[in-house]
Figure (cartoon, rainbow, N blue to C red):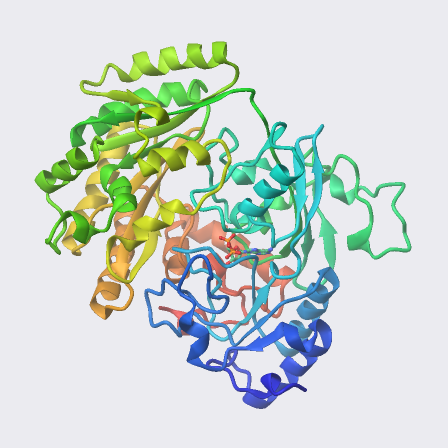
Length: 558
Ligand code: ADP
């Protein structure tokens, strides 16, 4: 065994002695190769603090101590058979394992596991191929290591951008598979990534391999002498999501029931024309009317993409840190926020959207959009060329046509040593609901000493209200306040009938407990499925609040 394999980790997996851990890592090295087993044995491993070079073993944006959500070892399988063998090994040793694709899940825990000392299974490092781009069917088949940036560059390199576009989130460095199965969103008409996925290949907790949907139907031309993961798939695998019988894909999203090793995703056909726009609204109180105007336009698909209504401080934070605007360390007052809006030439609320299609279509849509929002006094309309220095508008112009960037990372630097957490409740697209959520979240943010920074992301029928809480990760008091604030907001939200769509590791239990209709009936079902598919409870225990029977959830409370 290598010297590395003999080091002791900062945290052992729960219930595993140092000796057993040695044996386990030696066996893991025999499966994946010595060089692919890295034990997290000293705090040098915790120095990766940048999105561009993210930590693979702990939460860079830690709201608890930086060595709580941490892996004992990070193992990088070289292919599907290594993943399958690792699952068998983890079962044999009862060692919990936390899969991730890239680990840029920032604001939600990064690459870190829910259970301290789990094995981090880094799928993206070696499994990083675009397996197929199909132009006629407008889809891609990907491995976990393909980021939005990789996929976009692949299209560019192969001269396919004139045919196909990717839908990208605000930051383009994450894994397409990781983001999609976490139900992340982007901003083109294909913004609901989960809706646009089609067909998955999944390793189950016992190491067996399945293909979902049409993938369960073998391709008659496939070579049966090849291992299943290498066999040609059914030609409609990426064309029809549902196949036959119960639709299983859902249990592999935000879940601890499988490791996704291949996934299909629909790409958007180049619409043949594009125009992004910004509409600014001067007053804080405009929020109500803006949302009332948005709803029918979005439901009717006149707003073709996933538009975002951003609070001015989100854009301000991309342009400069808090110190660049004020000496105040307190939450900014309305007067101060108005001054900032004036300084950067924006409204209190700013809507970013886009028009898709040839000019006659865009012109017709723009006419309706402009007329509808003109009912709000003081609304102003801009195209990117009208504001060449508006970094956010210039970036959104790229994002909304599927060109990834990392520019919007900048808002995290609003405070020194900036880290962020998201509070992301689902809201009705209605003035009353939006205003009530804004009031509640802003009041609480200020009560805990933070500025409200947020955005409403308008889906097909609802809004993801994303509150971007920036805190100073090197200041224990700032961390404590941030932690308490999110926990308080979750309770506040549930009392109003608002639930979150996704969360950081530290809040999974609390949010899961709010989805408790009919005596926790859904959680009982989730637990039943978990215990049936993963009797030893080794795959991502505690993920999204689902604890296997082999774990004492109480002892992992945070
Ligand atoms: P990002 O795409 O933002 O870099 P990650 O790779 O960190 O995201 O993945 C986010 C979360 O999604 C992980 O913590 C894990 O729970 C889950 N996940 C990511 N990739 C996979 C996968 N291939 N199979 C199963 N779960 C995964």
